[in-house]
Length: 429
Ligand code: GLY
Image (cartoon, rainbow, N blue to C red):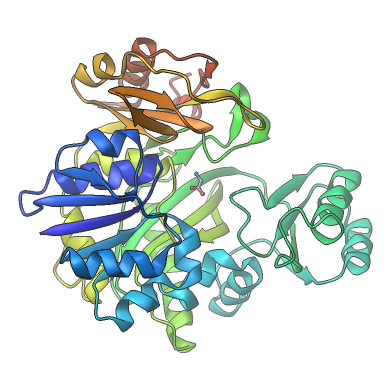
């Protein structure tokens, strides 16, 4: 079987790596890929960007690809799945209408409200004046969300009215997320701890994967600006099996059922960002793709069934398909170019990746890297995702940091407290 994975981050490296372990897979192309996918067994990078849908279709036809897997949200919201399906090509991911669950915060909130899914109360606005008036009336803390895709930067959790006003003005007046982002959602602040629920669905059946926790802020103790994610671990003790079943029954299933009522069949990954506070579980956001770095830890735990689940979801039939997880814990530490998520320099040589990879049960997924003249160079903000699995959370954390210690590049930085939240919830700290 030949597979095309679309994207260039740590998530896509993890997807390609997991699929490469299946004996039925003979070749995986990654478009455009990164320094890690360039060197991964069975994998080859293809110089086509994730948004170049016509070229991707041409490539798939010419190379007789059996399955395409879409990593990032942008091509999904552009309608890549609709375009592939029109050509009779098998592709994993939600179509354009379903991908609105991520691409429009206002659409997602409306679906949640109609489906009776627990989430923060909200109002939507399409002008600055009314939004500011609402914020002054409600007070802080309060959450301001740009409606459209904003590369993970569209959400401001404001702890003062001034901070919320600034976020609103940036969207409406400075247009920092572009002209298209002319609607905002203002939500009540939710107390609790965030966790990520991922599941694979064919629009009817749901296969939940293991729940993880991301670390979004750049510095230890959840300080500093938000990033795409600085590390993750799974399973997350905050969401036990009973809560996981509740999320499937009270959140994921009502979501796909409500979409079905609107004539939309959701196939692909359901990402529900959760806020858990004691027994209360509310949705912060839905995404239409695997999380990054959540994907790296969740896939590291999978023993079998991943390829069948992707094929089943893409074909619209997951009946009889199961995913089996290893009885182990996975932790991923993201190594970044110092300065990220603001300005940073890249182009520096990275050493020690092979030494880290040689440690049993460590896998170094690449994100912002490129292969050049036999060397691996930094080429982005998030550079490497050092991922370890071990018998429990504390040993997987220790192992991941043993891997990090082998690696070096100029200006490198990383958080030193990945997984501590989980240890606290286990009562181990
Ligand atoms: N790590 C957060 C996300 O993928 O949206």
